[in-house]
Length: 294
Image (tube, rainbow, N blue to C red):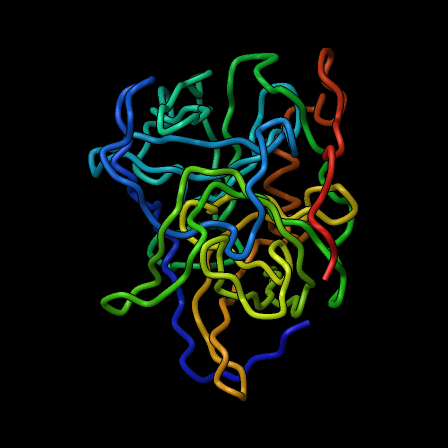
């Protein structure tokens, strides 16, 4: 577990990260910023319930991460559906291969925690459920039935960038579009939010003495991505920021919504259909492997 001082704390507003993604099958115009930092690149068949989400709004195209919890419903962040039509949202379950984006399915509707406000930034209500056509999911994950404890090890997965740094006063980075995983430990649980500190390295800029996949953090593009404890979905990414340890080491703070908070449980009980965790075709699937523990 990494402990940090409050020095140099800068929070990332929960905004969807614009990637310049184009129409299905076309190459993105440009790459964008922050992934599972210090993470390990994995194939889509690893953690198959966790998917890439591509949205299109008046402000541009963007990516988020989400997790199927039954055959057709994805749990993600509330800010990932900001600006979308509820009746025909332009948000897609997609795959990316060698810079080419391919849509698999378009969402039919979504619901969001009614207590969520985009203006409030990173907060415990930042959860939504996106509805896709029946039997869209390649697999689904069970939702955890209890809040994890401080010190519990977890795995996070996401399509965000694999570097964190400050640019013009905001958290920025590079390397989005690739699925990554990594491990860390819960450092705090307060007011419906799970928090932890991670390192800011990547495959190309590793942290001395730390194996890739350990002490990970998250960022833009990972928004809505899962925090798995014992292979169950315990939280989703809302935001984060940068801090320094007492010896001056840069670390990234990640904040995830606790899906077992009173507010999240009440919302999910209404939003997720009663067949959750018992899809008629696909089964709940544990990851084919996980990153090594820290």
